[in-house]
Image 1 (cartoon, one colour):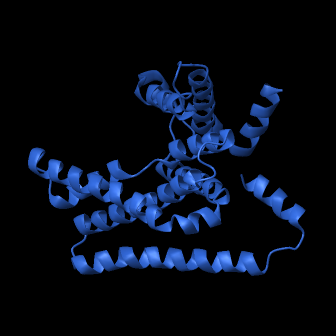
Image 2 (tube, helix red, strand yellow):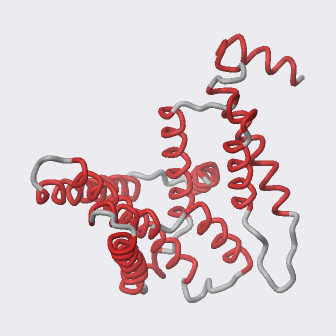
Image 3 (tube, one colour):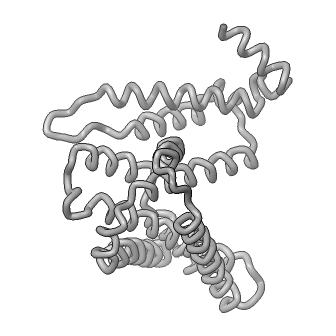
Length: 251
């Protein structure tokens, strides 16, 4: 069965399935990541929550990249990897957004904004100061490093929160919803700050224009999301079963 599947894929993609091709690299990385995640999930530590499977996936990727023989044959082009990262981030954020409790979010909206902006901005500024005075980096590159370090990883945060929600921890107070919403907003803030500082570092134009362009991108995204949300709210199907099935499929 496996040989037949590989033959069919080879007929469709040709040399991409062979060592050094993009499809071969994706298959190897996905297989090793799943195996690494399962192995880490088997580790049970007393009085501690289970280790995230993402840790095993990261270790698998580290080994693939740094073992010479494997890294020479497992290659994924930048265009492919960039698209896959964007798709993965979208899936994680959609999965987090579908589980939000709107009532709890309205009650905790002030706390959500403070929790999202405070740690990210403080960590970014602290990293920029250390990078500038200790490493001699320009301020732009210091803030680029700061926003990279200040971003909360949704791939780590979302599965852990969903696990705690399944166990019933903090559901009545809306803590899972608060953390997921704050984590998503934290990522938006970090990505916006990173792109703005990156544009300032490589741009020869006005700094004000680069800052305004970053703000404009955020406002455009908020407006688009709001319009789509209103469309789904007022033009959704009356059949609740279909809505539940659609939500489960998206999750």
